[in-house]
Amino acid sequence: MINKNAQVGSTVTWMAAFVVIFFLLILYFVGVGFLAGTAKIFKNEVRYIESDINSLASQRSMLVLLNSEFNFLGSKSSVRNAIEESVNFYIDDDLYLKLVSYNLDELSNVDMSRKSEVLLSVFSDSDEAVRIQNENLEKEAELRNFLMEELNDECYSYFFKFPLFEGSFFKGEYTDVNYDSYKLTIYVDSLSKSFVDFEYKGVSYKVKLYKAKSIAGDCK
Amino acid sequence: MNKVGGEKILSIWWFFVLALVSAGVVGGVFLFYSFDLDVREVESGIMVNRVYDCIGSNGFLREDVFLDGFDIYEYCDINKELFYKNGSEVYLEVEVFDLGELVFSNYSRNNDLKKSYDISSEVEFKDPPKGFLGSEVFLYREDGEIKNMDVKVVFVSDQKGESLHFT
Image 1 (tube, one colour):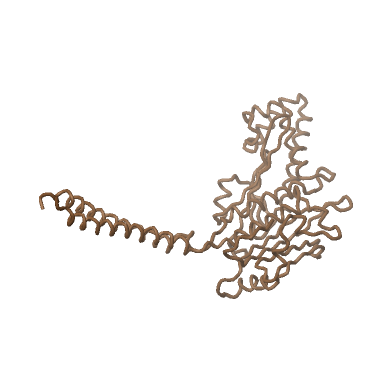
Image 2 (image 1 turned 45 degrees about the vertical axis):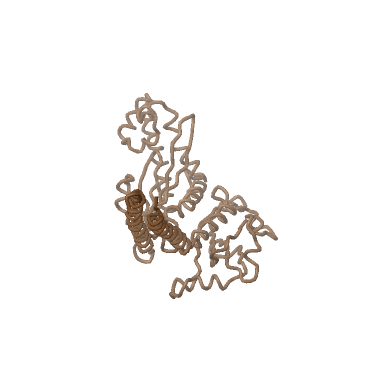
């Protein structure tokens, strides 16, 4: 027996190893069983996250919106052209770009009085400045009115943002809110987002359209 | 020098450990392969998006859709045979409406699949086919005027386990 000590020692080691491996295996099976019972991936189905499935559709609806035509300042124009015509005015003058540190996407956060000050500093003739300001406001209003018609849906609320204004459109009504406030007003966890980049004279800006489906009533 | 007995004891535990590890591997593989992965809904969503991307361009519905002899399968590079063979497990439906009037339609062969899919939203039954119903608006230029057209695309799938090549 004295000569068998080494063999007995390793046998005991493997006995202990067996017990350890056995319990590890039990834990493994329990873990797999738990996942099979609770985790969604084991529910036999692979599902899209709604925002994924809608993101392509959302991008397409964005393109439809940008290419839609409406009466803009007395003549037919696409939304794309109307946006460019409205925004490019602010790119043409360096003073506006300085106002937003050359990030035109921030222009919607600049209040009207600051814009007016810049306008008055650009034009020595104050009447001309007021006329241009009114014209810009008219452009914004016409664009907003068209969006109110176009983004009028019983089940979807939209958030539209471009350098001149941002807000939500729901059931034919426009609310002047920023994105954070918009997120608080929608009661869905999925939001499909789309955006298109515009560029003029080397300055780029984004037009964003977010869409969320209401979970209330028949929309569910 | 008589170590035979000791080796016998060790061999038994070795076999126990081998058996245990083998059982673990076999059990793991069995568990892995026993779970079905149902991708029918995802597959349907992808196909619907593919059809929309094919018949539309930059927000406009392609004019080719209204040409005589337009074959949506050929145009969109979709394997038509899968939709028209006997016992087809996939169904595609494309409808274009102009102010509520149907101006283009294409329905694949297995309409029963679509009926089962429609019924499954109202009546609960075992393992109904899965599908995706898309309804989008596209622009269409006609006589210099741009108008909206509603495009409805439905894809229903009841195929499981077989790898189909849609293109």
